[in-house]
Length: 162
Image 1 (cartoon, one colour):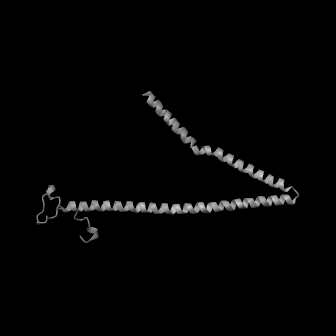
Image 2 (cartoon, helix red, strand yellow; image 1 turned 135 degrees about the horizontal axis):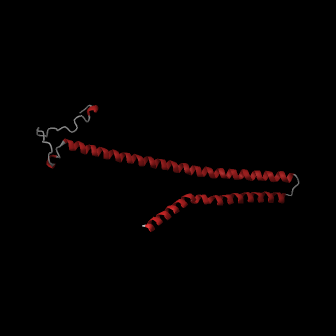
Image 3 (cartoon, helix red, strand yellow; image 1 turned 90 degrees about the horizontal axis):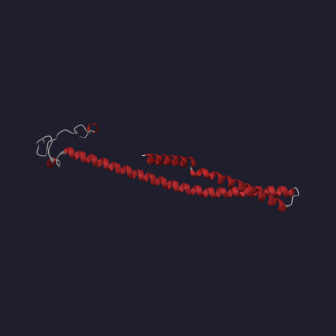
């Protein structure tokens, strides 16, 4: 069947055996090797299996390539964020030095100005760390843990009741 539209047109029709005779319906296992229907079914099963293997291989190749790309992107993100943090820290130090010079220009003692700025930065950093420590309790998923504890207690009560 050369026509692609008629590819399944003769499927299931009884075909003549190699000797020219049409095999009777319901032939036994001895004729299965020469039955074109079983050959077509085997070819179809093999084609589906090969297609599934190729699809799985293509999927795993895609996942592998995307994981590689994600790894390279993560590396660049870490490198550039480190550089960005250095720039922010140096900018902050520059601002604090400028503030210290400005205060010193008004006649304030240099040691007091530098100590005051350092103390203000220390207090600000401490306040940020304190907030982070308080906020870290949300990382423990408190509502989920309460729900699981309630479910476990209900299950235990049901087991005890029966």
